[in-house]
Amino acid sequence: MWNQPADDDPPPSSSVGFVEERGEEPEGLAALVDAVISFIREFQGAFGLLATTLRFTVRGRLDASAVAQQMYEIGNRSVVFIIVVMGFIGMILVYQAGLQLLRVVPDLSQLGASDIEILVNELGPTICALMLCTRVGAGIAAEIGSMVVTEQVDALRMCAADPVDFLVKPRFVASMAMTLILGVLATAVAFLTGMVTAAMFFQVNPRTFADFGLVGPSDLLICLVKCLAFGAAIPIVSAYCGLSTYGGSEGVGRATTRAVVGSSLTVVVLDFVIGAAGYVVFG
Image (tube, rainbow, N blue to C red; front, side):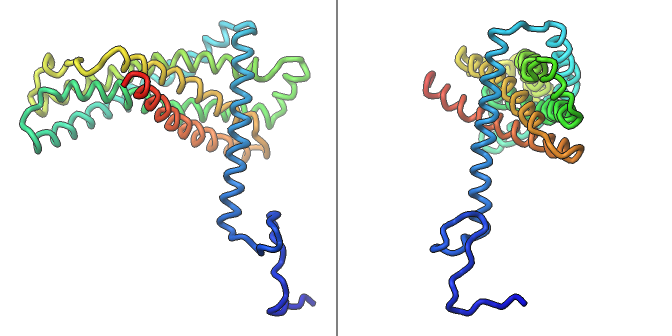
């Protein structure tokens, strides 16, 4: 029979490998350490996949038909989704900003200039990328994860076809191109719906609203860099989650969730890093 240890007995050793002299570490701390280690491993794996994809993209042969198919899947099938979401974002942004301005100053002449500045610098590319994370990222992870659990990826390796070259590279190139196009389209749609909202609710003349005085070449450059960076991050993170799938159909579900969460987090972090770097470089 198991005997209860006496009060003067030493505490049992920790199951997570901590030093016995310190006794058991709190469970929350052990979970935090495991989470940090897992994050470092995931980052290393995704970065390695990015390096391999770039190598195949630069040195390998590009299959134009595969890239065109992925451009259609990523871009054309996301257009309506992006337009609807960004249209409402543009209306909400202008309506709320107009109400707040009326409470402070009765002048709405700078409403359009402020709106286009926010859209170009932040909301246009970032929200568009986050929407693509939910649709494109989940789709990439589910598709590649299903191929992993059904051993199709192993079959590619047996046929001397690298899965990164065959599966990841076309999605990588197509995502960068289409995210750039969709980011510009999303910004334009949000600006136009904001212009209509300002004219309907605040009687702001469209010519007054279309003021681009606060947007310079540096803002446009930062917007384009963000679109390209987001377009590169989404397929890499999603494909990494798909390639690391295990456990059958349940594993595919876990990979899809990891892809959406990981790619969304990457987009937010890149948004901060690129914005901060742009501020340092351009002021």
